[in-house]
Length: 168
Image (cartoon, one colour):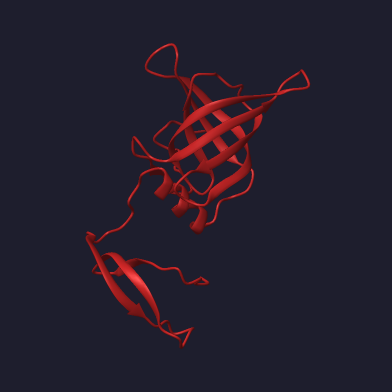
């Protein structure tokens, strides 16, 4: 019987590493033996559809079920997700713990993209060119044109701001 080593283990889904200085905040909530839940701030290091690696000052327990609260001030992110602690490692110093959590529910691509953006990751393949220009847009789903401010563009798309409500 072959021995499972690190080289034999392949992840189901690719990880997206976060940049330093992103806007994504994570609070880990655990059930304590008292009536109060314990909460700890954590720094997200990477995410996949099935889990996340966190850096925190508090060690958790292998197999422990926790609630992760995700929040961003710049993006519309404010939700909880149950997760199970799958591994724990000491960080570079005694005050840091690295924790691997598996989500109870797999994330969809839209949530992964919003978490990546809030975490400071730019997943675009084409460089963006910034500009600030007034324009009129008419969408295929809406025959009435409306005013926008173009913010940037690339070979594959553009970004604009508008006071009009646009349904995805």
